[in-house]
Length: 151
Image (cartoon, rainbow, N blue to C red):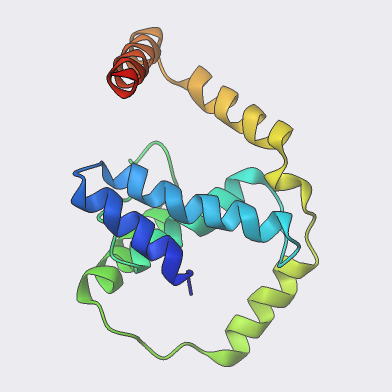
């Protein structure tokens, strides 16, 4: 269950009209903090991000499932299911046995997945997969945002 603070920050982003991926970023950030403070670990940075996105969908963030080429069919199906659960709202019964097993498995994983170098490596490799035009557009948008923040 995400912290109330995280959910509130994501809702604030939604009120400000920010994109679902920005709202979901709050949950990913929380996940990184959990790993850093030793609450649990993650096998890879990708897994840590996936956990955060999953929590975001379940919390009601309208984050679309990954595209066909970007993920396996199983992952897309799971993301769709989480999206439906989040939209339905309300709490559902969580299997205590499964939750304990998952937490135990994550506790045995390493904590370097949330390190600055690992996150930077992940960001760089993801950016490389996007085309030059898309990267350039992102950079222009970032510059525009910075300029707006300064005024």
